[in-house]
Image (cartoon, rainbow, N blue to C red):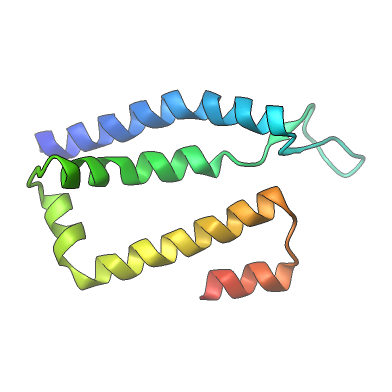
Length: 116
């Protein structure tokens, strides 16, 4: 139980710290969703927030691997063949979404990436 709580706290704190950094990067490089007559938000909204979420999700697993911490979650991720499929699939979906955030992709390309 303590390990699960510790894993959650690491991910939460990293997401909390990384989100403002990613927001600053998005604003600096113009990776924002600007206002238009079809939008309902009040200002420029950063589009690359998924970076902070993905990094926060995978950070506890990477740390447990680097420091050789044997937890239930790390054993599951590093020994179960299905976990590799999950990681590869999640990475593909993330990269397709990130590419769409940086340079708009057609809906057909996005759908193909998500199906893959």
